[in-house]
Length: 255
Image (tube, one colour):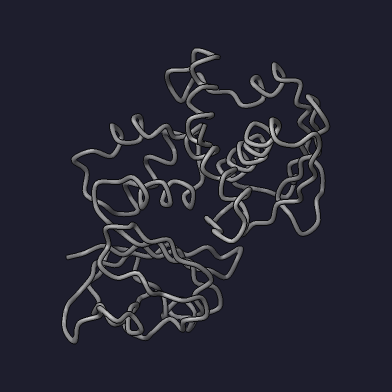
């Protein structure tokens, strides 16, 4: 059973058919999972379990309710995904573990897939986004509907939305990670790539006012290293600043 299938099964067991009915703490209590908040250092969440009992700690320093909710769902994902193959585990999950799909860490990726499907079931998500133009305004609205973070919602859209897109997180003017829809024609955007002047994200890191509405930029602004990058061509780009992390979240899609 895949992580997404486990999440769907859990929703079915507890007869949850809308976001309003989903209370993670109630499920955790019913499953003998103890959830508490604590001032954690260098991680957003922790889980320790042995046999059928588990203790989950969520950082009390998380200010975004959507981030806190996704962190709890992520830790629950470790439990439901791994309890049948391990007698005990301990994880301390960082911001990167929870907010990206790190393919070098299978169990973290699986926990994210479980959390994404538990909080934003694909069929519900499709209904919420169908026949709607892609932009951060849509993603913010959907994030509010599901009670999830903007980053988790954007990753869900890139993976399952109607328009092939790319999500990029840049920090201090450098690409930290990117998540690319498999149907998007350009995919090579390596960690460490410097944000170029053609992007509005560059203005943010230069201390200037960043354009928030969607913009049109040359494809080579982001994919100059991609073998398929044409000499001419354009992409839609929109950015959201994340001042707490000195970061910018960027979404790209074809014109």
